[in-house]
Amino acid sequence: MPLDTSTYGLALLRIDGRRWNELRQLRGQIRTQAAADGSSYLEMGNTKVMCVVTGPSEDSKQRRGGGAGTSAGGTTAQGTNAADIVVSVVVGGFSTTDRKRRGRGDKRISELQYTLSKSLAATLHTHLFPRSTISISLHVLSQDGSLLACLINAATLALIDAGIPMTDYLVACSAGSTSSHAAGDERADPLVDLNNQEEQELPFLTVATLGATDKVAALVCESRVQISRLEGMMAAAADGCVGIRAYLDSVVREKGRKMVAEGAVEKGVNMAMDIDA
Image 1 (cartoon, helix red, strand yellow):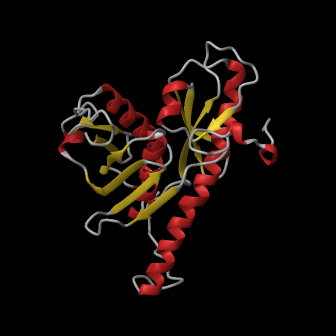
Image 2: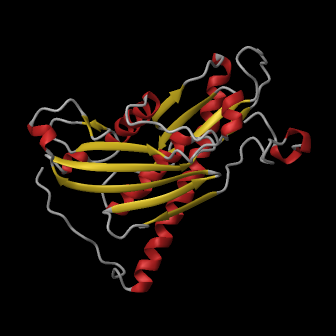
Image 3: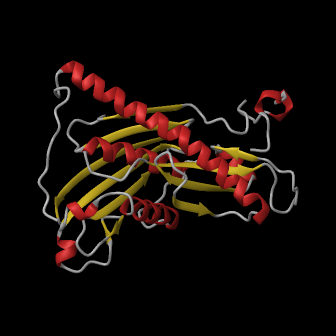
């Protein structure tokens, strides 16, 4: 990275006091709802998301009736002999300061659902559950930037809690540039994990990577960005994903230790599944 954080002056700190490569405070929990197959709660700064996973369950009438890929306000990623992934995003009217209520047919919500379903379909081992449905319901409680990244990370935690096999953690982080497209500043520096005010003023993108690697599973950029800055922004977002992945892994391991201590599961016991190829 082009910046040396050891000599970062106070004048170069961001509006919330962070350096360019610092993440906001992360707080996460899994198994927050006992009645669900998998559930999670995640905070990235003041962006707060709750996720509930149901399934894999017997396929709905949608496949038998030849549905178009949407159901009950959600977006479905379908495979020929794989489980359907139905994603539903509900944004609370109280989640933003303007108290704007979004309907189920909102274009922004549809885009989020589509991105989530496609990204998760490429990560989950859906071929192990043919003719079944995995329902993911995400509820946005508060918005302060990096919404897509928080949705992806919360869904990953809930899917792990549900015990659905996946290649690795699917983690996401946003990154931006300190100068707008019109400014043309070649010395603009990247920023990691943008808040709402930074997203409104600066160009940004969201990168989802697979585990601790640099393999990009999703890339969403809705801003005009000069090509010379794009590589630095993607590298900064990938570095942020590594830190987020480490935190999500610590949440899962801490919950596992508590379950072992409480006697919910026996230490060292593995669940074997005989799956026909």
